[in-house]
Image (cartoon, rainbow, N blue to C red):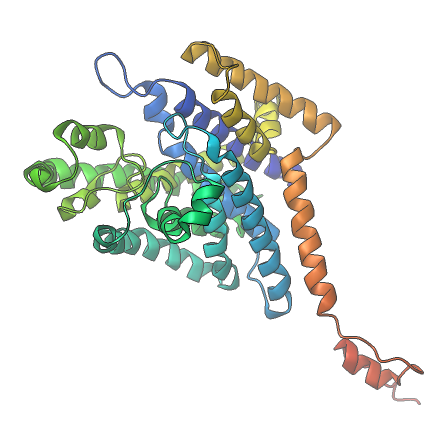
Amino acid sequence: MTEKRRLVAIDATRGIALVGMMAVHSLYESTEAGAPTLSFTMFGGRAAAAFAVLAGVTIAFLTGRRRVGRADARGQIVALATRALAIAVIGLTLGYTDASIAAVILPYYGVMFLLAIPLVFLPTWLVAVAAAALAGGVPVLMHFWLPHLPKPTLLNPTWSYLFHHPLSLLSELTVTGEYPALPWLVYLAVGIVIGRLKLSSVKVAAGLLVSGVVLAVGAAVTSSLLLDRWGGTLHIWLAQKESFLTTAETADVLRFGADGTVPTETWWWLAVDAPHTSTPPDLVGTTGTAVALLGALLLLGHVTQRHVRRVVRIVLAPLAAAGSMTLTLYTVHLMFINSDYDTYDAVLGYCLQVCAVLLIGLAWRATAGKGPLEALVSFLCVRARRLVTRSSVPRVPDGPPPPIGAMATVLRVPAPARSADR
C-alpha cells in the first residue's frame, strides 16, 4: 500500500466519524416507541470515540511514528502543547452554542492532548499497557472521586466560565463532563499505538479489523452477562432510590447512555455498556469499533481487482477529503445547527449537511489543500517548535573558526578521523 492510500484510509475513517457525529447531533435519538433509532445505535458514542482514536494516530504521525527521544523532547512538547491550546481556544470560542443540541468536544480535546504528551516518550508496548490500565483503572478511580467533585454544569465551556470558575471547569473537562479527558485518554493511547504500526501491511490492517471486532463484541457480551445473567441490572434498580436520578432518567441511562459518567450508588454501574458512560465496557467497546473501522478501510486499500478498486476510490475520495479538514467542518457544522439558517427537518437537514461537507471537502482539497483551521493550527505549532528549537541551538563564539575537533564538540558530532597514511 502506498503512503497516499494509507493516508486516504485514515482520512476516510475520520470522515465517517464526522458524518456519524453529525448524525448524532442532527437526527433523532429515539423512535416514537421510545427505542434508540438506527442512527443513534450506530453512531452514538462510537463516532466521538473514533475521533479520539484518530487524534491519537495524529499524535503518532506528528511525533515521527516512534518514541520521542531526548533530543526532540522540547520541540515535541511545545508543538503538542500549542496544538492543545489552539484547539481549546477554538472550543471555548464555540461556547455560545447550545449543549442540548451538541456538546462541543474541542475544549476536552485540548486537555486530552496535554495529558497525552507523556505517552509519546514511552515505548509502544508500554503505551499499550497504559491504555489497558487506563480502561480498567480510571473508571474505578472515578467511582471514588465523583461524589467529592463539583457537579458538572454540562453546558458548553465558555471564556467566562474559564475566568470565573477555572478549577470547576478543569474538573469538568478532566473527569465529570460529557467527554472527560482522563478516561478518554484510553482512545488517544490506542491511537498512538496504531499510528506507530506499519499501516501499509495487510497483516496489520487485518489484525486491526479482527482485534477491533473482538474488543467490541467482547465488551458487549461481558456487559450483557454482568447485567442480565448475574443480576447487575437488578442491583442498579435496587440502588436507584439512593440515586440523584429519577426512575425515568435511570432507564434512559441504561438504554441511551449518560453524559460522561454514571452514578456511584452501586459498583454495578461500571458494567454498563452504553454511550458516554466512561465505564470499562464502554471504553473498550467503542475503541473496538473505531479500530475495526480503520482496519477495514486500510484493507480496502489492498484491493487488487481493478473495477472494485475504482469503486472504492470513488466512494472514499469525498470521505477522505472531508476527513482531512474535520476541525473546520466540525466547527461550521456546530455554527450551522445553532443558527437561524437551520430551518429543515431532521432528515433533510442532515442529508444537506452531509452533501455540503463532502462537496466542500473535495473542492477545498483540490484548490486550497488544508482546511483553514487546520492550516492555522499547523502554522502555530510549527512556529512554536521552531522558536524553541532555535533558541536551544548552541551558539558558536565569535572570532576565528575553531579547529575541526573543537567545532565537532560544539556541534556534538564526531570529528573526522585522520587517515592512517598522514
